[in-house]
Amino acid sequence: MNKQVIRDFVCSETEPVVQTKQGRLRGYRSNEIYIFRGIRYARADRFQMPRPVEPWEGIVDAQDYGHVCPTDRVETETTGNLAFPKRYWLADENCQTLNIWTKQLNPDAKRPVVVWLHGGGFSAGSCLELECYDGENMCRYGDVVQVSLNHRLNLYGFLDLSDYGEEYAMSGNVGMEDIVAALKWIRDNIAAFGGDPDNVTVFGESGGGGKVRALMQMGSADGLYHRAIVDSGCLPELEISPAEQKEQAKAFAKKAVEAAGGLETLKRMEHGELLKVLKTASGGGFINWEPVPCTGSYIGEWYNAGFRKETLRIPMIVGSVFSELVPRPERINDKNALTQQERYEAVKMAFGEEAAPQIRDEFQKAYPEFNLYYASLIDCMVRPVTSRFCVERAKAGGDTYNFLFAHETNYKGGLLSTHADELSFAFHNVEYVGSQFAGEQTYKLEEEFFSSFMAFARTGDPNNDKISLWKKVEPQEHNCFVFSKAPGNRVAHDEKLMEIVSWNSPYTRPAFYQKKK
Image (tube, rainbow, N blue to C red; front, side, top):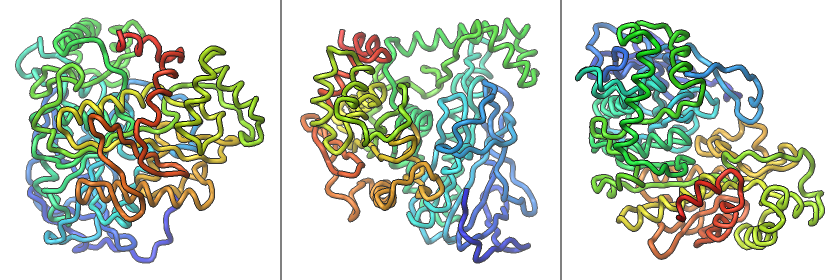
């Protein structure tokens, strides 16, 4: 990442040193921001619940990121780093560490705390994988204490071995319980770093958004956070009960144990051997790691277990971006140079001759500020579910703000935001990602988006002087704030469009049909 010029740097025997409940930590200060990295918040044996860190004597250095969790896939591609600059790090299952950026080491400062939960589903990623996850600018310009963390993923965090003894009763959800342990550490220690333990926002994108939703369905996390942001974290609902999910998870764990030659062997295996076991157990197929319902206090998803009444008092921001996850061919040429007929042809190619006229008309009503070509790239997987989540939560009595992020860049001849593009805006790091640059509009949108998230972290309401009025979702008024070159609150602006697109997309029609039936 293209960091600022260093104007000052401090790391000495006595400064900066912070006293936590467990012992003293030494970080460093750069350009007036105090940074502490790799702070251990818990320890755990394989497949076991996290336990608090034992107190220590002396001062422990906290200047380097801790280990990331090993993943259950092998990274073989080095492409895609222009749009999403990445960092890879040493991996170990003992990865329960967190990082802090703060302006003051003053218990009386009481700044809002923003806790970042990384993407990658429940199987991959880390708190430092994307360079835009760096918390310095969020801390500097948002006047918050920014925290990020690593936790157990994939089989280390979600393999349900509860049939093998009481000590494994929580194994299907220890990855989420790691996050709970981190939130408890924050509650007990963040005041020493200038943060307010009574004003904590949990914020996650993609899989991180799923983690935020899971926390809200867990009684063990109650009282540890006070606001929640789910960004691109709602995926199509599964037609399955929590009890059925639990049984499926246990059945898969049994296959894994058998493939390993027994539980004791599974507990001792190195990561490479574990990957072979998973391949055998899954028949070489995709493993959808996720928290296992009916494990500890986790009751399951909102759509099959209901919203917990204890969390309806938590204000939420829930949103997605324009293109998201649906794959479509991209034309690498100047989209604005295309004729209107060429733009329409792209829509027909994506959705078929019959649906194209309706999609064209509804797209131009919903997004008059954009080139018709972009209708061929519109998300119909995340956006409809996100809207349903917001409306259903509003009906249940929860304060919920919905957004749609759509930034147009010149990258590849013109693109509208795809999955995770908005994160450099949310962290105030857009200047470090060249593919996001589109003139002054880039920085204007960054200020609007960033200021809204920071206002929400302070008060639970995203409204601020950088944007026009952003209204909550109401049962009878489906408000959505569109962050684009024509920003503003819109009401049910794309519901008809989403219905038509969902019915005619080869990627979503089966799921949409099941839901409607």
